[in-house]
Structure formats: C-alpha cells, structure tokens
Image (cartoon, rainbow, N blue to C red):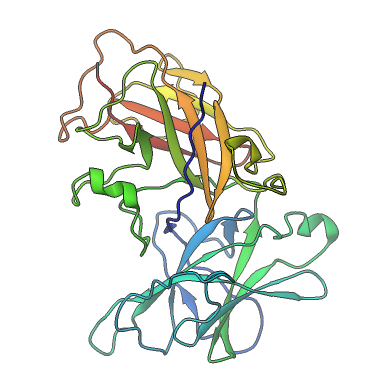
Length: 318
C-alpha cells in the first residue's frame, strides 16, 4: 500500500466553558463559552493541540481578521498588542506562544466584544504536573506587555477533534474548494478532494482524515520528511469504529451497528495537524444513500484515544 500524506495548516475552534483564571490579582479576562454542563475551572488540552480561546476583556480593537503568514522563525508572538504565555511548573517556567490568528466580534456599546485567539499548545506541556505536585499550568494573556488575565489548563493525553470546514478557523482549508460554502464537511479526503455528495467514498477505498489533539508524538528523523515513514507518530494507540446508521453521532462502540478497526497510518503532519488513514470495510446491504437533507451522512467513523474520541460523518456510495 502506498500511504499518502499532505502537510496542512488549519485552525480549530473548540467549545469552551467559562473558566476561572489563576489567582494573580486583577483579571480582566472572562473565557466565553456555552453548554449544558457544569462549567469546569480549567480547559482540557493535549500536548501540541491547536485551540481558539474566545475571551471577553481585551481592550484592543481588531477591525479585521488577523491571519499572519509565518516567517522562517514561525508565527508572530504578538498580534495587535496581544500575547500569550504558557506558565507551568513550580518555578513558573514561561513559554511565549506563537499566535496563528485573532479576530473580534463587533457590537454597539455597552456590549463587550468577544476576541478569538488561535494558538497551538506546546508539545512540552507537562502532562504529569499533578504527579509531580506542581500547580495547574495556565495561559497568561497580555496586552502591550502587561498581564490582563489567564486561563487554567488541565493537561490530558489526547483531546481528539476532527477538523471541519465550519470550524471557527480564520484560516482557509485549501481542500474546502471541493464542497459548497454553505456545507459543513469533515476533513476526510477521498482521492484529492474532500468527501461530499459530489465525491462519494466506496467500499475498500483508503481515506485520510485530518485531526487535532492526538497528543504527544515521537521525534522526527533528522532528514524529515522525504517519506511518510519519517514523520512523527502519535505515541499512543487509537482505534476506529464504523457505524452505518444514517446521521450517527460519534460513538466508539455501538453494539449491533459498529465495526471496529485500527488506522493504516497515523502521523503528525505539521501545523498542529495529524493525519489518520483507514480502509473502508464492506458496506451492509440496504444502506441508504445520502441526500444532503434527511440523510447527511450514512457512515460515521469514530477515532478513539485513551482520553477522548471524535467522529467524521461521511457519505459513501451504497
């Protein structure tokens, strides 16, 4: 089998609950979020994960979306006066983070605009902070060099998210040209284009899905990357489940419906993005076709790690 891979850069938004900042005096930052569960005092993140912080309390005005192009030294660490540091360990080690994008909602006073800031959590995030007796790591948010607040982090081994064309990314996914703008499609490649009603997958096809949050990775070979084998790999294992119920949600095990498998290939391809390749199993008889309205997907592929799972809802040809 010839494994294909492509290096991509895409940014992801995550649903965030209201979070309390570390005890550090005045804190102007309020983490925005919504949901139907008890808010957590910390934000779950995996090493290397791309996230978008949505916060209130930034005084700087951002008139248009900021999506900088990385230089030879990477993305900038300051955007419109905003910078973010990772603070961790008993000695409060400070790591200045690269910022991928920033934007702001616009409203009429007295409303407080929400600011979205996209960044990647360093792979050096200490996952064993509790074992070592260290305090929670946290993100310190600064304006013009002055701290204005922070967000507590809870490191986890993995926090899987399948990239979606409707994510609040601020960066265009080039493969999205193959689907209409008003259609939300998971980043699942069938051949050279995203899976959709216009690019169906077939039994036996080998597909690739792009994800964030698969956690720690192995080291790259010194001369990376002339072949897929030289790419860094996730250090932990991931399992797959194929569910042929129409519009099925993410579910690692569905008795009577699911078929389990393992990836053909999994690697870190850069920019916070991981790629997982898998082969489609035989389809059940009587599988209904996608129609884009009542049946938006007829196969759900769930990727499950030790701590998390997420799914790609795709359309296959019966």
